Length: 301
Image 1 (cartoon, rainbow, N blue to C red):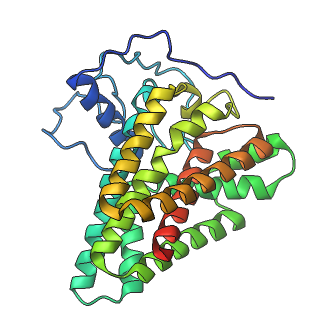
Image 2 (image 1 turned 90 degrees about the horizontal axis):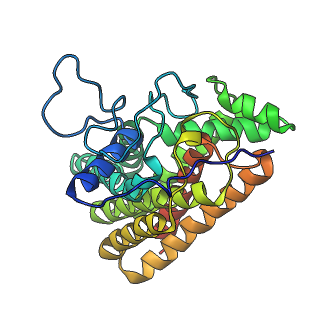
């Protein structure tokens, strides 16, 4: 049994500079662990992760009494209001996170660190920059999907904050395969292109999954995020494709984005079969498999 998703279709969505910045800021707070650039907040002001509405007047006020699936949403104290409308900016935040990993790889390489070690440091830097949000989702999905037969039991395992054998193995494989791909690419400028394109491209697919699949459960951040409109999905995908095209070239971009889309679609289909839809953990796992697929495609190309 699936859960009906809320929609944002009847809410006015004026597009201007304030909304543009507000969308990016909202996605920044959701997908990264880094503070928003700008003046420090004074005492009594809400933290970025507690107050999404400061620079976006079209967002609905947050219901602080509503139940929040903390583990599933990456430990965010947010109701998810406005996420669907702002999801076009997911690849923008992803590109920044990828660039941080690229900078770490370049610095390590410049200091004479071997490619494998530099690659591991770069992967670690991207995980730190995102608060390991997607890695957490991947581990929970691996534990839940492989650890039980009944749908309810799978969801219960995914909500558990403890990590199991399958989750541990999934994380080891994710970190190892990404590091191997970067080590194979080796050249710092090429690693920078691969990381930036992979992190932007992997996050660009999340709004499509949010629209294509029903909710797996009625609570949690994903349940209040809304359903992205086709134009929002297309905008995010177009941004990711443009970023990849500029830094990878047309041939590699086509191969990489097809690989990422295929991996995301496969995980989404598995989630539909396993738990009847998606949750925040599923979105994290989708990002991880898409990122891996893009990096492997770039390394092979």
